[in-house]
Image (cartoon, rainbow, N blue to C red; front, side, top):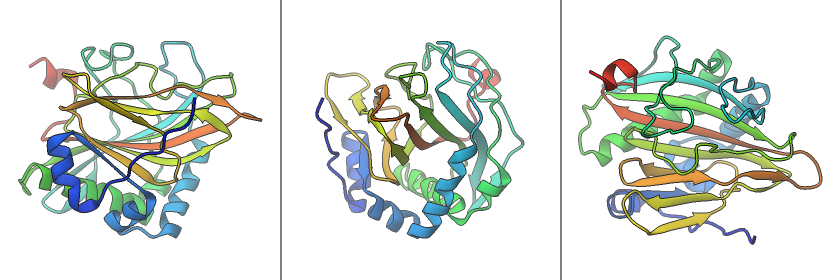
Length: 250
């Protein structure tokens, strides 16, 4: 299948595009401008994907996914990490892994102190507040470092299929992809037939979406001449509360 390049958007169109179609896509140059990160800072952050532990919770029996997870709160211009906590989603949003508490290995302190990490989380919170037209919102942020490899022949970035995450906003950064084919991003209306598909392949390009308006997925990856991998940084933002079974069932 021929790779479809994304049609990149302009920063000035974020509010309009999120309101009308529920997502926007930015190239690496725009991401650097948006986050005030330098190329060197982002490249330095990219190096931390080399030591991700295997995901021990894959219900399909696969060993292709590696990840780390961290939780943060942004409120009143302050970004703080919270004590390490389990990741949880209801079955309604994740039919494969929903309903269980998944305690992944934490994002390392040496990663969190890197300048690009702080800049990315802060800027996404500011964008989310602007989209909600309320700068006083407390944003509960979850950050996931993913590596999907092809050592077993195939890797699945979203084994749960097309889904929503049960949050307000989701940002997916393409950190790196090497010696693979596939990994096509697909975004569809949550309540309609209209959708788009494209392949993010530029390091530090980004997909930003309103989780209430669209569903998304990434297709499986396969190796080219040798085993390869796909690295992404997924950041979710949820207003006021982390997604938690106690909150959801109250």
